[in-house]
Image 1: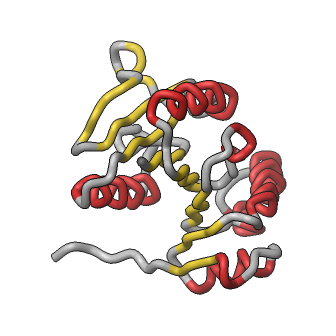
Image 2 (image 1 turned 180 degrees about the vertical axis):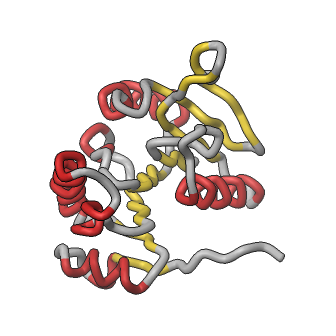
Length: 178
């Protein structure tokens, strides 16, 4: 039983490539016979908020909080879900800011990192938000004892420069089904 944790699911209007990638992985794991769930933030729709619990293509999706409050509600929902489903592994997908889910469970952790912003964040946003993201991204160092999966050699190099052991960081290049 696998639980993915990400800020958003692919149905969120603000979702992008990271969510599409995660959805593809989750659905493929389900097709291989795994029990797969996703814990993410909720979002507004024209009638209020999206449904809190749905199943899409075999993946159970649980939504709590919103974009800004997800880290506050995530620990409570994580504990409730783990008590009900007894996950074998929890895979946290880092998008900009680590959620630190490992503080709230004792399960094996897989950290998924598409890329790190580093100082490049300043070219994408204002100085205040950029500094906040830059500093919060540094929390990724707290994951050094866990297994990490990333999609490029350059991201692995960045993680190693932050103190991750090279043997703990696996590069799994994305692909497509033809």
